[in-house]
Image (tube, rainbow over all chains, first blue to last red; front, side):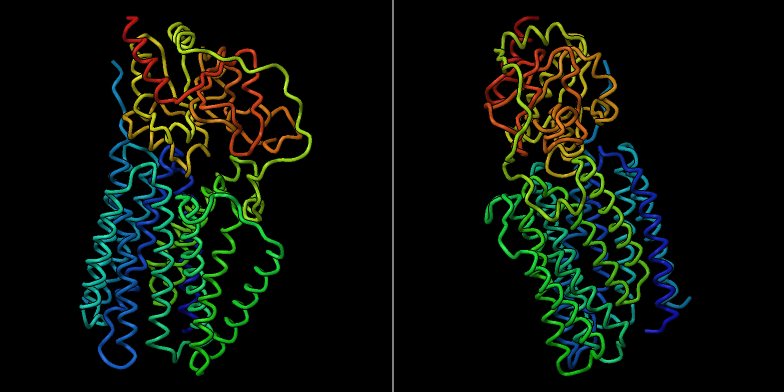
Amino acid sequence: METTILVFLLFILVLSIFLGFEVISKVPSLLHTPLMSGSNAISGITVLGALLAAGLAKGGTNDFAALLGGCAVAFAMINVAGGYFVTNRMLNMFKKKEKK
Amino acid sequence: MELTTLINIVYILSAITFILGFKLMSSPVSAKRGNIISAVGMGAAIIVTLMDTHVERFEFILGGMVIGTAIGLLFAFRTPMTGMPQMVGLLNGFGGLASLLVAWAEFHAHPEGQGVFGGTVLWLTAIIGSITFSGSLIAWAKLEEKFISGKPIMYTGQQFVTGAVLFGILATGVLFALDTVAPEAYRYFALFSVLAFIIGILLVIPIGGADMPVVICLLNSYSGMAACASGFIVQNNLLIVAGALVGASGIILTLIMCKAMNRSVANVFLGGFGTPVTGAAAQVVGEMKEVKIDGAYLMLEAASKVVIVPGYGMAVSQAQHAVRELTEALEKNGAEVSFAIHPVAGRMPGHMNVLLAEANISYDAMVEMDAINPTMDTVDVCMVIGANDVVNPAAQEDKTSPLWGMPIIEASRARTVIVMKRGKGKGFAGVENLLFFRNNCRMLYGDAKGSLQTLVSEFKGGS
């Protein structure tokens, strides 16, 4: 890997970490459980890397690598589907009752 | 427009939706919208990745997508709200495993041309993924209390063993990164992945069940870091951004939980907390005074401001719905009812809020510890339901107490305190609760759910 790409990716990483701390420290403790399940869903972003591996062209070492990629797709999708839907289910329960 | 340009533009938009999703979580009103926006961004990123020219076959993709989505949906709709910590714990582990598999697949297909940097990234992704996976499995089992007990497991030479395994991971990592094409490279890869799996177990095994919330938060962060590291393998910005967001979120929650227990992260991970305390604790003065349902009813009936302090014990006895009924009865009687939530109440951050919300309790009645404490003097009746250590005044008064310095909900300052408790036992930390011996405190023994229901029927009969 070239050094220029490495520096560029590190640049993105550092900025994202600061942004993450800034945005997430504003989430109230009321919503910390949905925050964690939502994080589960977003950590399923690995699915993009998994898709590239699972879609490798046929032949040679690629076949086994693609099988590994397919397994990775499955585990990452558990996070994506499970995470988003359970977060939605939880957030649906947070209601404000009108005072009589 | 070139295809790669289009793909990258969609990735940028997806990154924006993830950030927006977290930002909208700053309020319960907008949080749901944020979650949906974030999910749309994820869907778009997946679709454009499938259009990538490097994706040349679809059988494994299709298989993985169908199986993963089906299992995910099953988790999402079948898990009860009390089981949320276990579910989040498991998903952390799956995230780690997915990253490990991506690293393995990449190394298997392209061992050549990785260079020292490529090798290092593969190593990092594999070990973070592997540690997250095994650590999460142990944390899950401890929470379920199925396969291993929730108690901390300690043995002699623990630190030596951990140190030796860590050294093994480092050494094989260096050998691997220096030459990923060497015939031994595959063996090194397998070795450090397995050693990392072992270290994940070794790190979580000594930690007690009461500290699992902290562990879950930290593993949540690790699963993000693993995704981030795999972003360096496939050189994808979106993985790095999303992984970093999750990593930051987990770290913030870990620090909040540690602060709420007045302990350092190191202290939690060196383990051993939750074992019975020896040594001289301060002498307790006074005695516990019991109250029966009738007495409790009279106190509540006369109260105009009631604060309820729920703990995990409330969820265990499935008393949330009875709590809601009592809340309604009290409000009908003209009282103002609010819920004081300690950051470590429940088994993960915010767990108590979800359980109360499930029982249809309005979220604006749930108040954070720092907001409720200044008002405690004006409270007529403070009901403690299934909580113990988080209301123990020893944290503020007894320097020899293991709880010393931990922020608490100052229940003892209310005019009257009613503690609903199954028996006379001690809390998680094994410390005598000074609150129970106060003059203004009354103990209401018995199953919380049953007692609450009787109280509700008293209210109905009396009015």
